[in-house]
Image (cartoon, rainbow, N blue to C red; front, side, top):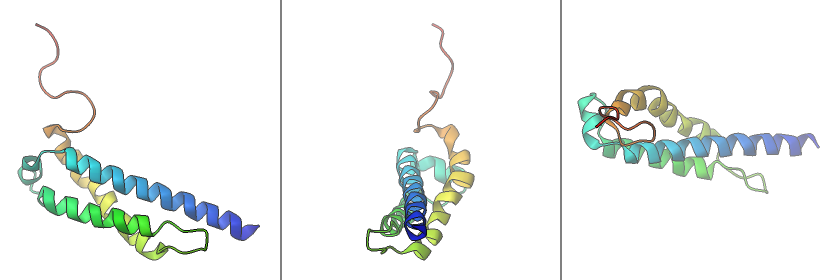
Length: 109
């Protein structure tokens, strides 16, 4: 019973990490390329490559019913997504492209 509980906890964590990686990739895809260079970050293509590889590793890190998966690599692969969410995205967000409020002057005629 304990091993089943551990499996489900590991599965839930792995899925959460994978979703975070995919959402970071999609968010990076939606941002303009000029925002990355304007803020002194790596180029958009480099970030897409890094986040895409991290998401692929995250997918492999999801445990299967037989207990497979690359758990250690999944722990490492979450790092680029965390860096993107904490450092890169807040800097490039004002340039638009993502969800949220429209950029520019508010309403009126």
